[in-house]
Length: 302
Image (cartoon, rainbow, N blue to C red; front, side, top):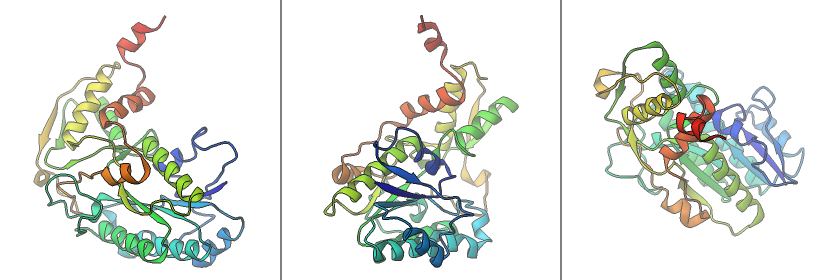
C-alpha cells in the first residue's frame, strides 16, 4: 500500500510518519513543500501519476491564524485552492482523500459540543478558507473523509504545551484566557485516527465517507489546560507557578477565536469505531516526552 501525506513537516504530518504506525508493506510518501506545492495543479497531477496511491492524507494548511487576516491570498491558496486541486486530481484517479480541517469553521457561539453537521459560520479569514476547502473536497471527491480537529499539541514544532512549559521556566505567573472552551488534541492520537481512516477507505470502496470530528475526550479552557500542564510539569520537577484566568477581551488578537470549540466525536465512533482517549491522559504521555517521568514513576523503577 502506498500512502501520500501532504504537510509532512507539521505536527500531525510528522506523527503520520512515526515508525510502527503503519502496517508492514505500507510505504509512506511525504514530499516536502518545496517538492510539491498543492496549489500547483500540474505538480499535483504529476506526483499522483508517479505510482498508484491507495490514499492521500492532507494535513497541509496555512495555520498562522492572525497573519491570515492580512495575508488573505496566501491563506486561501493553501486552505481552499490546494484542497480543491487535491480533490479534483484524486477524484480523477479514484483515490480516497482524507482532509484535515478545523473548529474555526464554526462561530463558537453554540452551546455544547458541535456535531459535524452543525451549520458553519467562520468569523476569521483562516476559518473561512478552511470552510471553503471543506466545500471543495466534499463537492469534488465523493470518496473523502473530512476530519475536523482543534487545539493540536505534540513534541514537534510550536504549540500551546511547549509554550506554557517555556513561559513557566521564565515567569513567576501565567495569565491565560479562561473563557474559550475546547478539546485538546494530541497529534499522535490524531495521526493514529487518520491512518486508520485512510486504511479503511483504501481497503473498502463501501467504507463510510463524510465529515467527522477527532479531538481527545473531555473539554477545558485554555487556562484549565495551562494549569494541567504546569501541574504535570511540577510533578516531573518543573516549576510550580500560579496560572490566573483572564477574559478574551484582555488578550486581543487580529483574528477572532471561537469561544466554544468543543467538537462531538460521536459520528467518528459510529463510522470508524474510533473513540479518542481523554485529553488529560494523553497530556501525561506528552509531558513524559517533553519533561520526563514523574517523581512517582522514578520511585517505582527497580
